[in-house]
Image 1 (cartoon, rainbow, N blue to C red):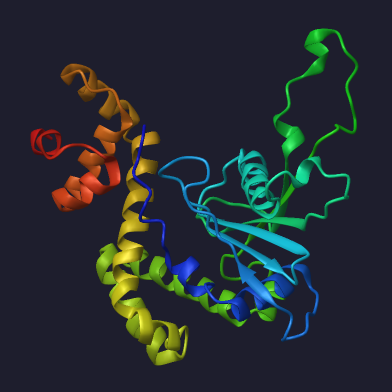
Image 2 (cartoon, helix red, strand yellow; image 1 turned 60 degrees about the horizontal axis):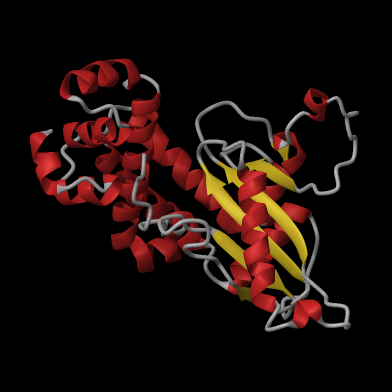
Length: 292
């Protein structure tokens, strides 16, 4: 399935789109303190692995530390590999010309990798994903198991749902408010509101209660569109892969359409999404969408 992900701009990436906010976020995640004048430069990577895949947040602190953060509502077991490739691209940008072949020793930034999780599935406060978890088993070749591989990478997966990792969110006001914002949307959804109604009610509620009020005042009109895009897509994909897989496959087989993007398109259309929106998400043509 090849979904179009060029709409990656989200509430989370908008919220943490300034150096001061990123410095505070890193200090909260690591439990450290940095001077307020410590320089932070954003180098978020776009179109790194694929034409339609964006990196969430990447930034350098003091020119010596690079931090890569992905925000996810489902856990991807391959994040260590993905972040390794991102880091290689960040480092490649620092090495110019034939510097790699110079006799002078180069310096590269110290890396830190995070996934910030706020999905519905149960998940611990923190878990570590390692690149070595993906390696092939050498025993199949008759070789002894290597306890310390030559190359490894560690990703901290941190649960940022409301009520989790209290010490971290208390150190970063915007992170705490983002968790409350997301929790309030889910609360309205559980009360039977549609997604659009839940978002609109949440925006009004948070504005009244001083939750992300400045952010919502500036970006309020964008927030509705961003969340509708992000959540509708995630819900459609989840449905296609889980509950809708059997029915969708059976129907798809009868029509000669077994690709999940057709199932996702049907789910989006069932939620009254526009043809333009469905085309943007799935990459299907208007003719294909009309047939559905």
